[in-house]
Amino acid sequence: MHGIAFAIAMSSLLIGLEAGARQVAGVAMPETLKLESGELLLNGAGIRTKLFMDMYIGGLYLRKKTAAARAIVEAKEPMAIKLHVVSGVITSERMKETTNEGFELSLKGNTAPLRERIDRFIAVFDEEIGKNDVFDFIYLPGIGVNIFKSGSYRATIVGHDFKQALFGIWLSEDPVQESLKQEMLGR
Image (cartoon, rainbow, N blue to C red):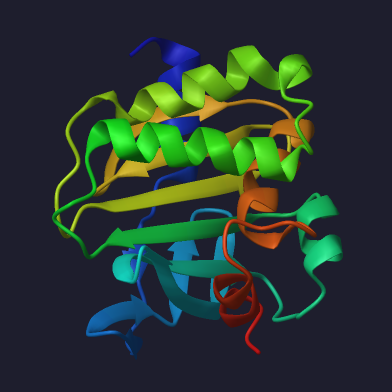
């Protein structure tokens, strides 16, 4: 990793987990995440299901808890989404496919302006995915979305517009799963 990329990765690296966790379908979701830039609170967490199977637990982390989905998507402040894979049937190909579908929903089919960055994001899933893998998507204003897989830095995707599209997968008017959206909003 070159100088600037390494600095970006280290500046946003999860540096610790606070005591306490919320149990969601047998998975302990930390109540807080500590970043070098401050602490994020678990706003809400829920289960992503597909074809009646639990796929992953999704958690939303914010500086201050809120149920205002649009405000979260538009905000230019640190926040994170944690995905904890709970199914052995999630493969790299399925994750890439469903993530692309999520971007299609979030952007109402207009993915062309962000296509290059979406493809870079989806490439993070090239490596095989297994049960208990954890993905952290950490947005830091002025840096972008830093992506970690099971604690290891994978990439940074720049742009507030990309962050809006990514968080919109779960929080837009047409999310990948309405019940998961409500759970991430703490409802």
